[in-house]
Image 1: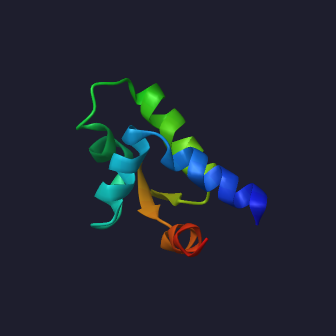
Image 2: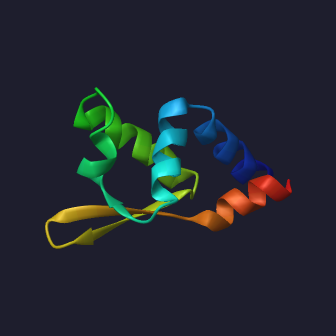
Length: 82
């Protein structure tokens, strides 16, 4: 569990990633809609999402041509319990 909690808190340390998670609390979103509030490249957004995926905070699914990102709330609950 120690490695997982380290990944979780490292992912949560960035304000952009926290804002993405906060948006995902409302429900799944496409990568494009997650990127829209930020003035950064899609490559930078993808890097943030990879960090969140590695920490098991989000999952990405393909829906047609779109990539849909959803919150994995269980990991957040584990961090809160810790």
